[in-house]
Image 1 (cartoon, rainbow, N blue to C red):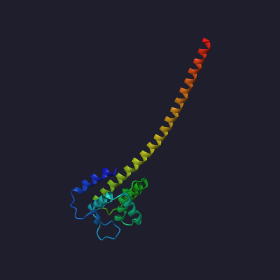
Image 2: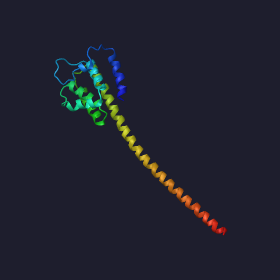
Image 3: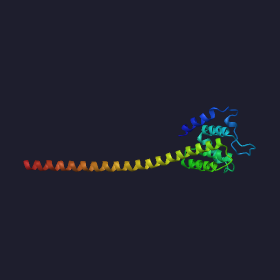
Image 4: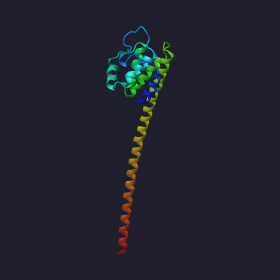
Length: 173
């Protein structure tokens, strides 16, 4: 699912001239005088998406509770990077809080909306997957039960066939 998001976001970034590398982007942990642009947020997204999951977890553990907009965005990205349901819900909730922020530019708001929809779709997929897994387990049990019954019926048929053979052998004697 995350592979689907990257091409969409790269298309958004394609028209932008990259003057800084993703490693140079401020993660929002220090106070900044100017608000980051949507392009900087896209670069930060690209940086977080490309980092190994363990590194994202390390940064997430190190990160204090987000206080400002940039920290909340970074916190959401780090949670989104992890491959767990709880992290996805944390990312979604953080993005919902960001969505309520009136200081976001239109481009930032669109990016937050896109990421929010992405995380919600991951959550929905996971819940559907869990439901299907439970149904699969139930169906597997029903199949085992049906096989046991079939085996019992085959044993009864064999027993009746054997009994019939014995009866017919006795009649012939």
